[in-house]
Image 1 (tube, rainbow, N blue to C red):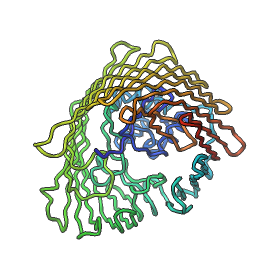
Image 2: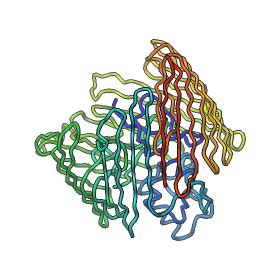
Image 3: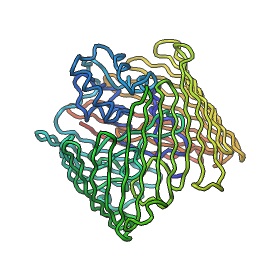
Image 4: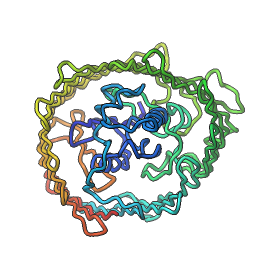
Length: 516
């Protein structure tokens, strides 16, 4: 099942719970870290700034703004008065918001923003580069990036740039996120156990290292009408053209487009998206189709529907046809039928739990469902101290995880123990992390793992240089250490990461970065 999946575990140092299905979007991690270190003031944040918060979409951002225009928020818990914000969503976003100005640990000047990274795989003498700059000019933001991966020779292999007027238009490379992402969307947040139903966020500049999920052209919005156009050279599919419009009516959003995807005949695309509150329940629904010369619309009809009752129960159903003609990366896989149920509940004030199940099969009545099921417990007996446990079972693979985390304003410590059992072997992983982030940043992690082989591998998430993280697929027997140091060198912030793998010898990676 091809997905782009992201999950936030906001109660710990790591914002992601990682397993074999995750495909990374590195800039998301940088955004989360900056938000945690510099929470947004919900009384002064713009709509575009509110949309940076995970789980916040257009509707919720507008409700926050409408509420504060009548009366400023005096405490964060007032958000629970807004339709669509339940206690579970509130728990996920409260780390990123505030109602008063706080001292910022990392400077975020309202001038030029620069990020430059250099990474070297010492064992293979390979280099990786990433350079990004963002320049404000009056109400505009001018941005560009250049990126090179380890296995590439051309230092300008991938680049992107844009001119952006928030809420008005973007010229250059941009992401489009309409509806639940069936046709016109970038990877959104859906992951078994996350308890979220995604919603649209509109258009935004493309500054990701993901090279095949963006548009190159122009998008602009005026009142209820959004127009977009793109022509871009895709590495796998040749030249793609896409032109379309979206209109937000009182009953929902209608979006249509014309494209020549995969260099075939001209293709028509269309979708209808509904986001509605009904008796305390949030309903999100999208139906979409497309076809060559507008043929095959019935056969390609796909849809997804999500319901959140506001009291801990979420359900999502998606039915996606294999022939649905789009190159936009949906949160759902093609030729897939999916049913997802998630239930969360506070058992006692300091203890909350969740249980979820996901059924997936090929889009055929003759196919069998593959099942995934999980149980999660989060216990916070004392301020700063939390215990997180998870049991997950899927086809031929069981996994148990226990985390113990302690956090103060400047110090975080975490210990994890994890086991995996498959039909072809078993294994375990344990590590301890320390992170200090006040006047400078210091993080170190010690990892020990042992598995019977590749089938019983364990996935481990690691922090990295700004805007990056690493997912290590650990198998066999070995040890691993990584160290991160960050220091302010006015007006820059400098970072270093050094990792060591002790398995069949020693291999090392070194990374350096500067940021404004």
